[in-house]
Amino acid sequence: MEKRRLLIGCDFTYVAAIPTPVVFQVQPAESPHISIGDRQWTSEPVQPARVYTDLYGNPCVRAVLPAGRSSFRYQAVAVVPDAVEESDEEARECPPDDLPDATLIYTLPSRYCLPDVLGGEAWSLFGGLAPGYCRVQAICDYVHGHLAFEYGSTTALSSAVDVNLSGRGVCRDFTHLAISFCRALNIPARYVFGYLPDMDVPPDPAPMDFAAWMEVWLGDQWWTFDPRNNIRRKGRVVIGRGRDASDVAMATTFGGPLLESMLVQAEEASA
Image 1 (tube, one colour):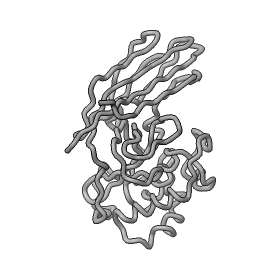
Image 2 (cartoon, rainbow, N blue to C red):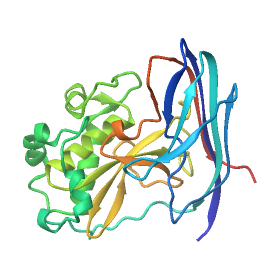
Image 3 (cartoon, rainbow, N blue to C red):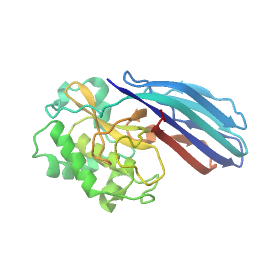
Image 4 (cartoon, rainbow, N blue to C red):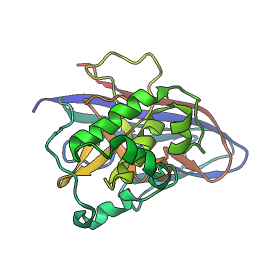
């Protein structure tokens, strides 16, 4: 399979009143299909950083924001397949009793995904559809049409229920709502966070940002679905996976520093 090279990374600038511990999740997770090279992690002023792996297997970096202004930057080159993610309309849902033990956590309510609250609506909308891949795609079609993409329309406190009522959100909100509907139907669904370049699609005029999508357990594997874009895409580079956005925040600060700026890069490298 042909491969393509991406430049990925991000740059955070903070202003802190006092030294503030922080955890960054911006480095790609291990993948059998994507190789990561030329990794660089820099800070100004220079600060020590240490790496650990969280309970979901995601790579994280711990550091301390010094008092005053500081910047932290991650850069890497990702070599990705020149192909969209796989699909299989014949992939079947598993009866709950046959689900692998490790997937059961992704059928339960979490901080932002509330299948218990949205269960009635989920069964009313999708319960009559044939179980399987196409039912999950129908959920994505519905969420994609039901929500309008709008920056600033939600906050860090907005759940899937809030988004469903307001009809607006950003990619993480689309994902939370679709995950909630899947879980309400006893379909394991997990939140995925990463880099998504504009490869072979019309360029988005908005500044590049991190992206969120979901993976759903059907048959004997996880399948990628994207309720925000609602098309199969090239170049996804996963940073982390979890129950919802609370498990894979790009930065978690143990205090109240000001995020002065954030830049994200995800673009094809020039030949």
